[in-house]
Amino acid sequence: KNEVEQSPQNLTAQEGEFITINCSYSVGISALHWLQQHPGGGIVSLFMLSSGKKKHGRLIATINIQEKHSSLHITASHPRDSAVYICAAQGAQKLVFGQGTRLTINP
Amino acid sequence: DSGVTQTPKHLITATGQRVTLRCSPRSGDLSVYWYQQSLDQGLQFLIQYYNGEERAKGNILERFSAQQFPDLHSELNLSSLELGDSALYFCASSVEAGGTYEQYFGPGTRLTVT
Image 1: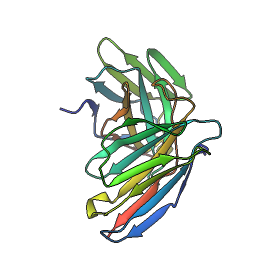
Image 2 (image 1 turned 90 degrees about the horizontal axis):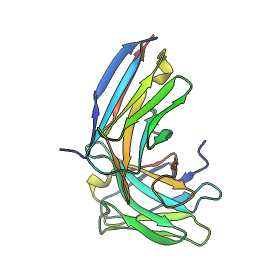
Image 3 (image 1 turned 90 degrees about the vertical axis):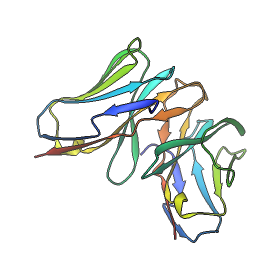
C-alpha cells in the first residue's frame, strides 16, 4: 500500500460541475501539498496546508489531521482546469507523492 | 513563472553516457530539491540541499549525484545512463529547509535515453 493514496485516478466531468479529489496518507506529516501539473509538464503548487481549510479562487483544500485525509475541491469547473492534480505529504525529510488524479473537464 | 530555472529543457542521449542537469533556485531561496518523474513510478524525491550542504536523501541511485554551489545553483549528475532513467527531472526551491515552507518547481528537464 502506498503511503499516499489518491482517488479517483481519472475523472471526467462537464464544465460547471463541482469536483472533489481525495487524498489519504499513512505517514506523519508536517504539511500536505496540492500540486497541479499541466499537459506541458510544468508543476504549480496550489496549496500547502497543515490544518483546516484554504481557498484560492475556485479552489478549496481541506485537511483532517485525525483522519489523515485531505480533499481538493474545484467549484464551477472549467476546461482550463484539465490537468493532473497531485497531493504530496510532507514528512520530516521529504515529500511523498500520490499517483495523481487526471482531471478532464469537457465544455 | 515560479522563478526557478532549469536547463536544458530537453536532453537526448545514449545508454552509458553521463549528463548534467542544472537548476537555479528563486532569488533568496536557500534550499533546492531534486525530483524524478517517470511514467511507472510517478514523482519521487531524490535529494535536497540547503545552503550548499546535503540535507536529505531519497530514492537516489548511486549512479546519480548532486551538489549545490556557493551561488546556490545546483547540478544533478546522472552517469552510466540506462533506458529506465528516461524521465522528467524537476528541481524545486524553498526559502528554508523545514517541512512547512512552500516549494516552487522549475519547468523540468525531459531526459530521453536511447
